Image 1 (cartoon, rainbow, N blue to C red):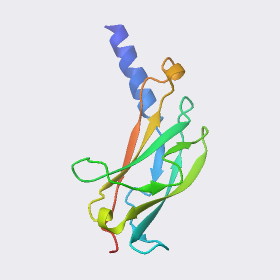
Image 2 (tube, rainbow, N blue to C red; image 1 turned 180 degrees about the vertical axis):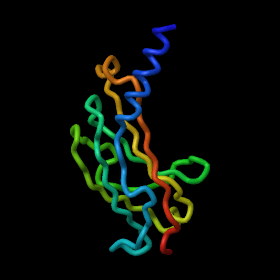
Image 3 (cartoon, rainbow, N blue to C red; image 1 turned 135 degrees about the vertical axis):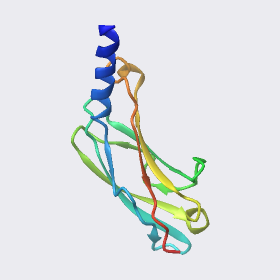
Length: 128
């Protein structure tokens, strides 16, 4: 029984050391390209055991929405910030609901990193 409590405590401690993605409620705005919307995001890595994060965009039913960014997988050192832009076609922006980042665990990191964290921000209504 003590082993179960110790495992739960470890999982909870790992979950509280997740990464951050801001803003929490981003607003898509027109970009410099016609019919393309843009949002500026930033991430902060609070996990010492993870340095790679994948960016995704989803609709309300969690189906992927096409988007473009400089890198879909970002390398973020421990306690570092990264800023990135996400571009979505105006037609796809109408259904884009969430922008998420998920920690990527390397095969040799499985011993140290138990939990892959996923953080999502919900888009405010786009300025279409």
